[in-house]
Length: 269
Image 1: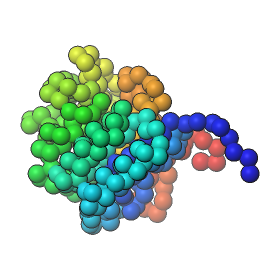
Image 2: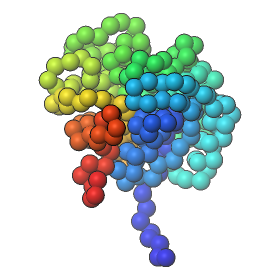
Image 3: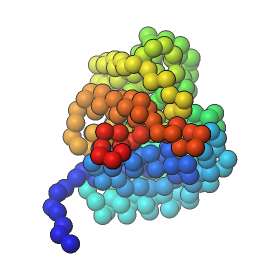
């Protein structure tokens, strides 16, 4: 068998496992593969879930999460990493400490707090831990509307309020913030990037999808992949938004569920 010398960026997802394959680590790896980066993992939780509900969450011991990150970073030159579901304050602190020790150059934090089904994915005392230890280390954080409300402490009901929230979060934690407005309603989806005093508003047509399970994970994973490839954050955000739009627009029906099509546009997909 002949090997090739083609080199791809290596990225890392630190997140929970979704047994339905639509979100979490599984969605991240599919996104990475679609965008031609090599994906590695550090699993934080195992969940029993479907696109409709979460039936159980089983946390991985923090020391095991740390060991996964350490081993992967020793084996590969990690270009960028993302976090997803971290669940507990102990896991969050372990991830934050591991990030410092391993010198991960670009960290994307998706502050996963509540599933689309309404199930809580972050313990109460973990919110302060993520704000105090992890957000200040991030290059960019990607809260959805509800998560942005938690991080700012006030409701968001318009694009103007979403813009203010992105600025508030970015300034507070000294990071770039992509505040996602997917649940604001209307015919278009508006996302706001605030980075180092500059604001960029991204607008796109809304896909009237039956289900959007995993869309947030796919967005942060695509952003991580593009940043790992050396792309500027404005371009990476725009392309990540388009990636999710296309995955929703060309969703695949499996049983009674509509699943994101991570590989739309590729041969035989």
